[in-house]
Image (cartoon, rainbow, N blue to C red; front, side, top):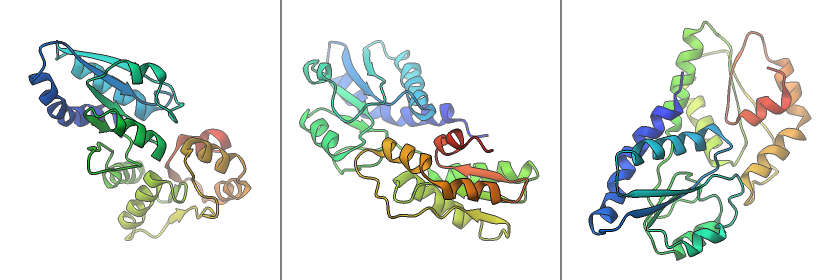
Length: 227
């Protein structure tokens, strides 16, 4: 099984070197802002990883903003004089505002990569390989993938799924219409595209059983309640 918590811990062992540069030149405690969506397992894993690493640093004070509404910088963050920031950078407006802070930043989302901001993100190929191995070892012969077209992490996982199942015959991939563009609000797009997608329900119902499904988001399964 995939363990996001362990992956996040590995992520932050690499992040720590980046912020240690800040710590080395400052006598006072280093204030780190944490801007993530903790309503999802991935975001909670990041919070756990940061908390575990912070316990090893007496000079770190982490101030967290763990709400899913990440379209704007919270007002307190712009006034708090943070020394560094670990953040979900989910849209271009937020990206510009975070860059304007002129502090070291690590992006743990990956949608808007920029040369000036290092990105820590999950490896789509590793995730898909772990899922496929688990499915096959559990005895499943029908494997399926469903995702959101033009959503960056979904496209990466679909590409990996297609590549890693080339030698298999019983593979099913949901081809959702790509006419609806993501726009700036990724989460609203996810919810809307699932809640109003009757074709998705038909696709789920028509899959041969038993079937193992790799979904790019739990929203797809939670909102349908069919698997």
